[in-house]
Every structure is written in C-alpha cells, then in structure tokens.
Amino acid sequence: MTAHTDTAGTVTAVYQVSGMSCGHCEGAVSGEISGISGVTSVKAVASTGEVTVVSAAALDDEAVRAAVDEAGFELVGRA
Image 1 (cartoon, rainbow, N blue to C red):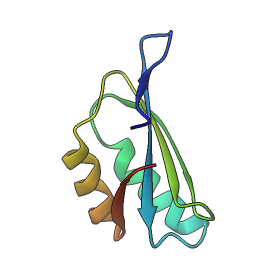
Image 2: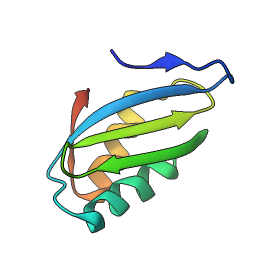
Image 3: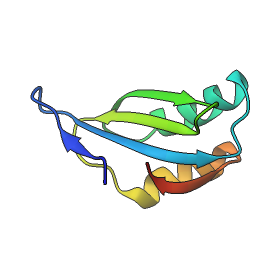
Image 4: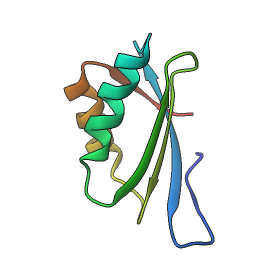
C-alpha cells in the first residue's frame, strides 16, 4: 500500500490504472479524480499507468474506482 500521510497533513496515494495511452487519457483520469471531495492534486502518467493523488484525508478506494470508471479506464489497484 502506498498511501502515506505527508508532514503537511495531506495524504498521497499512488494508483495503477490500465488503458491510458496518451495525454488526453491522463487528462480524463485526472479530471474525474479531481472531482472527489478533498483531492488537492492529481498527476496521471500514461506511460506507467500510475496516478498519484494528494488529498486532505485518505480517499475511499471505491470513490477513486468510480471516478476512473467514469473516465473510461480501469483501476487495477494501488501501485
């Protein structure tokens, strides 16, 4: 599990998403996850399939899964 609490009171989690292949894909996934309450930063990297999410508190994995599904991709799990 790669979620950890940062010193600034935020939580960083890295997820593995399948199906991203370009910048548009990264933007779609980032946009959907950014809509989750408490999310302050999202960085999706298509070449690795990793999505790094910074939030005010730990996120519900099902909320992240729903956001990724809405973008048209599959949440594989935590990286």
